[in-house]
Image (cartoon, rainbow, N blue to C red; front, side, top):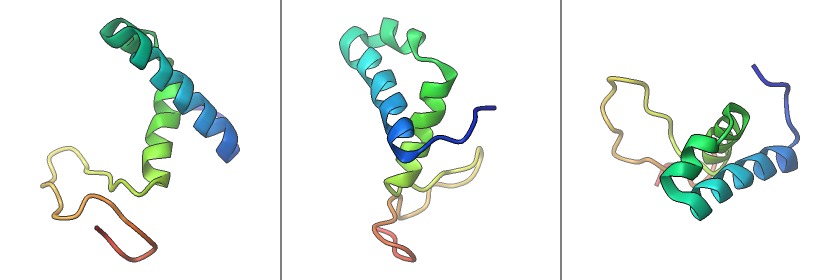
Length: 71
């Protein structure tokens, strides 16, 4: 488990992981660290993506646009 990050640290880790994938495709995906993957997931959640547990149906709305509202 990772230590708690600041928002900037989380976004930076996520962006570095994304940069690996963006520049090297599938090879870059294999180079992404678990911290970068965790930061990517946290970033997606922070931007409002609704998590779907394994086996659960896909909700009609996948993005929360503001607190208590889903798009």
